[in-house]
Structures are given as structure tokens and as C-alpha cells.
Length: 394
Image 1 (tube, rainbow, N blue to C red):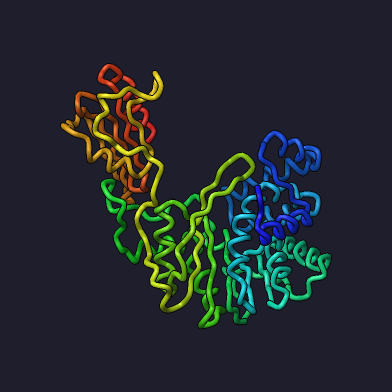
Image 2: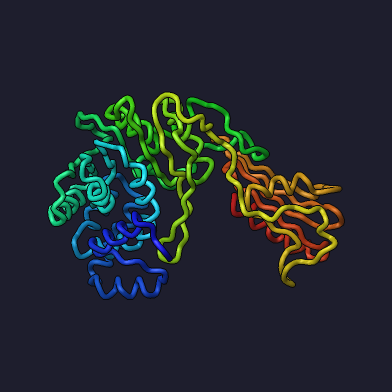
């Protein structure tokens, strides 16, 4: 694959950090076993589990361990394609920046690239892992970078006073990866009510509100912010966008969805936002589901067989399944269940007939939709699936 000059420079930079690109789990874990001791691997696994279910201190302890010189290149090589994708987007947007803050910089892998790419800019990286900051500073010295420095900082506690004309926050603002966000008004719609209490609760649970406020305190009036978070799901994207809008941030350009590989696993993250205060470039906030890959419903399912002998006549696991369900002709519901939890979350499952066929439709208030259509002779398969969904939600 041909690289642009910027991407080639970034690839060369990652190599200087000792990072390697892998496309196979087998070869990656073979290298990991060669590079790390059994004790290193056991310690990493233990810290990963604590990070996943523990406190912010457990998370910091994981990043402290990952910054060890023998561990850093091995662990962060899993994120090679992430660095290439996100680093290229950020670096391209820094052309006229004079003061750059990289919030949540980790060991400075991308921060040092920004400093190398723009030697006339003053670059500051902050992170709450002291070991990561130490690793970043060592690499900056090894690369003879005089326009970058790294500081310990925790926005949950406070922030040093300064002003920056560009702030970068990638995988740093919305730390609760398991938080589903805001539910839609009902299982029939993707729309969210403007509920200040629910919005405030999301910002508090994820730490978004406090961190965003403190970053805005140090962003110059004409400055901009580049944000890339794990908010691809509509339930998380909408409250993130509303948090921006409520603080006077506007889109400077159309948000970009980003797909990258974590070795063999594909990750869809983002969007990548470029924001400014006040008036933007007339780019409107979009709270609709993104265009999906669901096969359009043609309304002639009985006239063509499935693509494989054991496949349904029609199957769609994307938001567009709702539109397909609405278009079913001669629809009659055989059985349906709607479960509603105390926090307003809903799950709806129904079995029915349409055009002499059998269908199962499933929808919830966190934007999941599924429609499966089979021949009448295979109705038993859908009944079994129906029971599995109902029992799984109990």
C-alpha cells in the first residue's frame, strides 16, 4: 500500500519507537511470547482485568506498567493502525498551530511525531500516568526534540494554567467504554429527548463534562479542538455532540468515521471531530444513525430463495432493519414482548407473518435492530431464537 509523505513519515516514526505492524494474531502473539517473559505477560493480563472493571487508579496502574521499555513496543504495536489513521488526521490539521496540547498523551508516541512534524510549534503532552510521562520524555530527548515537553496532569483533580490554540484529545475524554450512553425515546425510534438530567448524568459517569470544561478553560478564543473517542454508537455519539454544542463548540468540518485494525480485529471508532468556538463552517450536528450495510428490502422475498440452503430469505442486523420491518406487507403479529427497565431502556421482540412468510423482529432503545425472514416451514427456527432473546434479557 502506497503511503503519502505524511504517512511515510509517521510509519518511520513508529519504527523508531520499536512498533511493528501485524495483520495476523498468530504472528503477533508469537512475537509477544518471544519479547516478554511469562511474568510480564501474567502481570499485563492481571492489570487488564483490573483496568476493565476497576477504578481510575487501576487504569493508571495498567498504563504505568505498559510504559516499561520492554513492554511498550510490544503492547502498543497492537495499536499500529490506530496510530497511522488517527495520527495522520491530527497531524494534517496542525499546520498553522503554534501551541499544541495533547491531552492523554500516554507515552508520547504521537505527541513526539507532532513535534517532529512542526518544529516551530510548542507542543505539550499531559497524562496521569507518571511512568508514561517519563517514557515520553526519554524518547523526546533521544530524538533531540526541543519543542516538546511532557507533564503529569489529571483533569479530574486540576489543570495548570496556560493557553493553547489547538487541543488534541484522542481516546481520553470519554473513559467509560462500557457506558451505553443515552437511550432513545422508545424502541420504535432513534430519537433522544433533550433531557438535561440524563445528559448531565452521562457527562458525570464518563468524566466527559469536567474534562471538557477544563480543556476549554485553556483553549484560546480562536483555538480549535480535535477529538476522537470511542463513541461510534449513536447512544454515545449523541450525548458527546450535545456536550460540545452546549459549551459553544461548533463543527469546523464534517466529522469523519474511522476504521482501523487492531491486528486482526477491525475497530470502527469516532467520529473524528474538528471543533471551534462560535460559528463553524455551517456543518450541522447529525443525530441520525449513520448509513449502514443492511441489504435493502425489496418486497419480493417469496420469489427468490436464500443465498445459501440454511440461510434466511432476508436478514438485517443494521438500523435499516427498522425500515425493512415497517415495509413488510400483510404483516400479522403472532407474539410480541416488550420489556421496560426502571431507567427507561426497552427491548421489543416480535414474531409474525408477512406475505405467507415468517419473521422475527428485535429492537431496543440502544439502536440495535434485527429482522430475520424465513419460509413458513422453518418457523420453528424463529420460535427458538425468540425464546433465546427473551430468556437472555430476563
